[in-house]
Length: 110
Length: 480
Image (cartoon, rainbow over all chains, first blue to last red; front, side, top):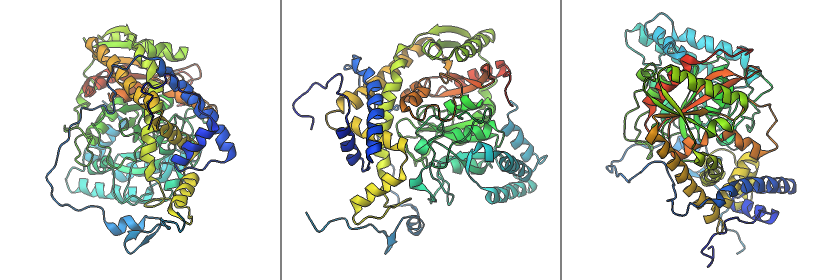
């Protein structure tokens, strides 16, 4: 997705309102005009601070996703009780026929 | 080892005090004091009294109700409790009643502890002041115009105000230790994987750990022994029993090599730095070999943290979509419903972090931000590893300053983030760390001294923490 440019910029460009609006859409959030202005300034400040690490020469270090040296362990495949369906559905915003009920997923238009 | 919880449980187990009295006293203190502090979102008076009577019947029958018999415990509101609202101080979970108990809650109950209420927090544990709560801020018991720290500010304030002897919090970048320091109580983050995260509503899964807050180091040790140990329902839970730490608290520090971390002293307010140096001297007098060490990698920890934690949060919080639990704002189709629900349900800081994380993970920026931050995480872990070749434990400040004023940092998220600079390194590395109260500043506000140890170094950690506690001076001008 990042195209043919193999080298990431060491200092990415400052974030602007258009990008903040795009990121909000990706995160399924809607921003008012006020919020868009405020968040753009605040996110730009946070990213400028984070960009401090852009200067570091760490390319020969392994990325650390997790503090533990985890390896996969398989348990025996034995059936056991799970959460009670009715109790769980009782806390859902809407349920029907013992399932979660949601509004229309596919629209009439393409 | 005269912790309040230890003494209380002993008294209940031996029948010299009833669990009912203990619970009634706690409820009474909350009723008189919490309208000012606002540590609790929900107080479980009836349930707690019922449970206390059960414990008293167990004692009367000659059986042992457990190591925390009759001890009232406050629970941060991101820990699931069966049938009891668990909101993370967020509108998006208002009124939601979990169908199960977190493993830590189950273990506390099994040990005879009595959950007395759910405590206020920064929404989804995102914050350092407990001001990002949909039900308003918690106030610092030492000065009601100041924050208690966060995100476990309700739990820290509940212990500091004397409402409960012990509480549970969660610590992703300092959320147990920072409020503990600002409120003048003990707060401990275990080694990643020592305490099960099953039933902890996730913020940043590779960093989150549940841990105790208490008035004394001994009580924190007892709590860890009760809640720690393998849990098959958490795939990141270490396959080992809870660490043996209570016996370590009074073991002393004779011959222990302790490194005073330059970066965790120099980058703090003068009075905080002075207390930390005094703690180091006291440990020297107690027989430890104390030397200063610079770990320059620590200075990059915070920047890496504020990319990694939001990135993980943006993924974890995708589950709040209005389908299965909590709030739903109706809309004609499911995508619009998702957007309307999340827009109405999340507060400003949560939205900021979700967007920061989404951005750091998005195409074109992933390498420059997220992947880079993960390499810096390794850099910080390497810094620790080098230091632990020479030292058994490390010492520094828990926070750069003492408690700040309510509202002081709410308009400047970055200033708020800097409150975590001393605590994030231990989270990035997955190591245990503890904050122990050590005197105060000119205003009598508490100062916390932080002890850190290598992964699974909990016994050493508690030995050093115990020695710091024994050497701690009284606070001048403190309200309590």
